Image 1: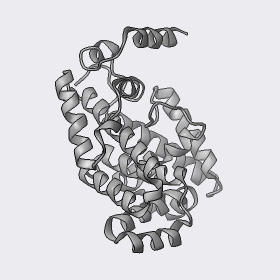
Image 2: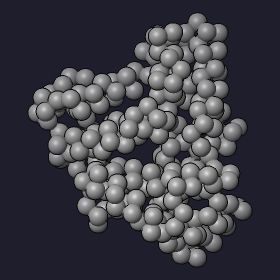
Image 3: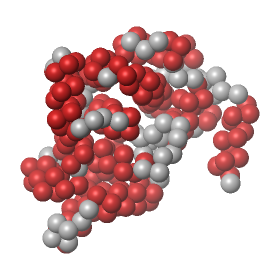
Image 4: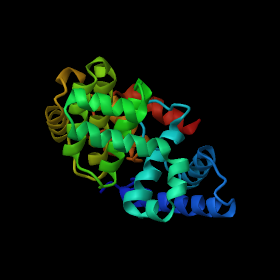
Length: 255
């Protein structure tokens, strides 16, 4: 394990803390809170604990709204709260409930039939919604409630269901590979450049992603440092990142 890393256990503890605050707010208000209130609670807890949401290289304005996927997955699959607070889940996590239904359809139906069922569940699907659906599955994989094999199956299924959305799906596949490599580095499973490249190519093969679309090391490095808190000195032995990029990151930290 890499010293100082942010691991799954720590994220679980932070998310359980956030859930305690959400439930408290829900009960004190008599069920009169909205999704935006929960986003604020999650952001406050993450900020206090110096936790960064699951993310790629960018910092979208709706990042914490997207990170509600983590709260949903841990609350439902890890804490069993959906049965205890069905109205809360219906009110706050209506989108995630639909995304999970879409995932189940995509993994169990032929493309044409899946397309029809998904439209009935969620309407016409746009790039942002598609990325959120894939994010939900990645979150399940990260917290151990689903497998990497299922993630690969979902990416392939979505390509078959929405060939016109190939660019968005392949872009997410690229992020997924970068995320998994960064995670493996943080766990100490990847300690050299040969192992890093082997994992990148193995994941690409599993997903069916063209090797030309593999994430570069600077992308992996950003995720490793920001999401998993992997020290720069660890990454220098694994990732082919220029000195200029490392200096820029250090200057950014000091500013």
